Length: 171
Image (cartoon, rainbow, N blue to C red; front, side, top):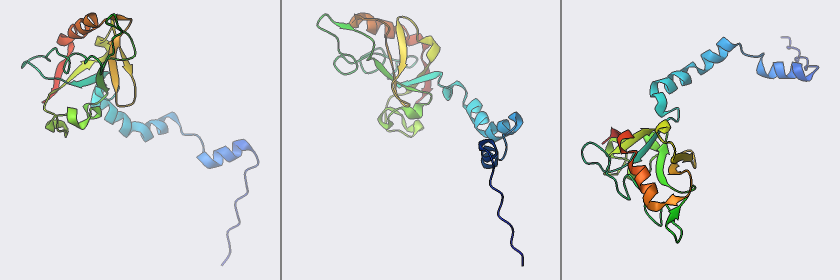
C-alpha cells in the first residue's frame, strides 16, 4: 500500500484563506445557507424583526387599563422624579422587544408559558414618537421614556395617550 503525499502548504495568505474557506461562496450559495433563517424571520414577521414591543397590562375588556402597574409608571421604581416632580430620559415604562417571551415569566400568562395573570399587549415601535421615545436597554428589555424632562403627570398623560395603539397579543 502506498501512502498519500501530504498536501503542499499554501504559499500566500490569499491561498491560505482560500484553503481554509474553500473558496468564497456565491451570493446564491449564501442565500441557500441562510434561507431557513430568513424564512423563520419572515414567518414571525415584525415581531422578530424588533418592530414590536410587548407589555403585560390589565384591561377593561377592550383596552389596557391606565395605571401605575399597567399603562403607566411607578414613582420611585420606574421613574424617580426630582424635587419639582420632573422626570427625564433614562428611566421609564418597561417593555420587552421583539417577542413576548422576553417578558419575565411572572409577566407572561399561561398561554405564553408564564405564571402571570395579566394579558400581554403589543405596540408597534413606530407608534412611539415625540414626546415619548423607545430605548432598548438589553436584548430582552427596553423602556418607553420621555424625550425631554417633563412633569411626571405629563409623562403619565403621554403614556396614556398611547392606549389606542396597543393591541391584545395573548391572554
